[in-house]
Amino acid sequence: MRKETCDSCGTQNHFVSQRKSYRCTKCHAPMDWRFRVTCENCKHANRILSTEQMISCCSKCDQPLDWSINPEKHVANQIPRKTRAAALLFVAVFAGLSIKAIIDQRLTLPYGRYSRIKLEFLNAEIILPVVSLLMLAIGFGAMIADHYDRRRNEWLYRRIINVSLWSGIFLYFLSAFFGHSVG
Ligand SMILES: [Zn+2]
Ligand SMILES: [Zn+2]
Image 1 (tube, rainbow, N blue to C red):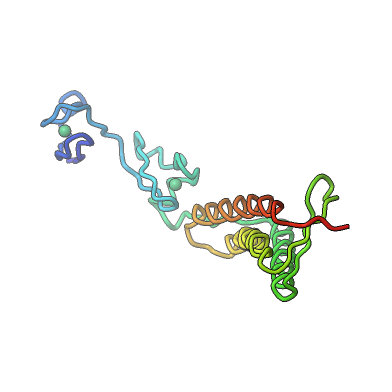
Image 2 (spheres, rainbow, N blue to C red):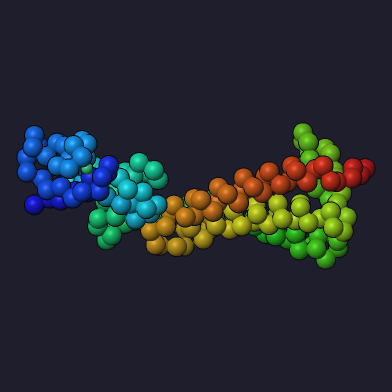
């Protein structure tokens, strides 16, 4: 017999019939008898009407719920070769610029429309722009790593990519306030 915990009072109810089991036996709050499926990817607790709905996707991360029930059906996401090549180029450029800036204690970055404004950072001023470049490198690096990681953790990569790229862009423009214009 199916059991379900009441969301309101925590009492365990047994499914008798659609009509009799509609409300909790203790607090009389309406019962949710839909099946619970915890998404393996993002841990979101989904509710589905029937087992046929396994083909549907997680309401939070959009990955098929079927993967959570039948792990053997999981297909790791593929990142196209061109995207990976571009990401690798960005990692090399951003990481390279950061390393060079740390060695030289000097960094020049382009800003503004068509990158016409060049701002220079010296000594301690390089910290903020270097952190922004490293965040961007991590974001693009995660894109490449996601392709080679066959486990069910696409959600984790998406989060790392979003957080590092957006904070990288934010810090890049924030650093503009601390740079000196050159040329
Ligand atoms: Zn209850
Ligand atoms: Zn999910």
